[in-house]
Image (cartoon, rainbow, N blue to C red; front, side, top):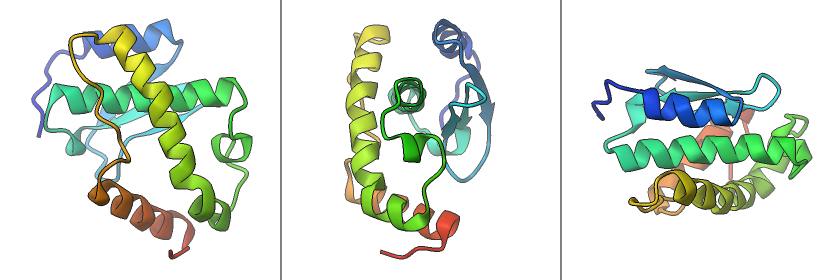
Length: 137
């Protein structure tokens, strides 16, 4: 588990975006809410600062998508589990591309770590869809 005792850099970036950044041990992954303009960083899931900031930028990219009407059904929570099962991973990878650009702007000395690239990440996504929507792949 990552040992970040100073979240000022994360807070600074989020404030520039007009987003509240919350930190907690959630146990079910980080998330964002475009309506409330906040992200929740699950401190259970990070080993390195690179992973932490990559995920933070990923969640900010969801806020960007919300603000710019990208994949409206997904980012405005008006889709069902079938939609998420069919399109969710594609959307998450689209978000990753935007997140990589955000990351490069704020953390140019580090390399972005995509959130949905590895086999384990994809398996986690489908387990999350099953848990959240009751839909199985």
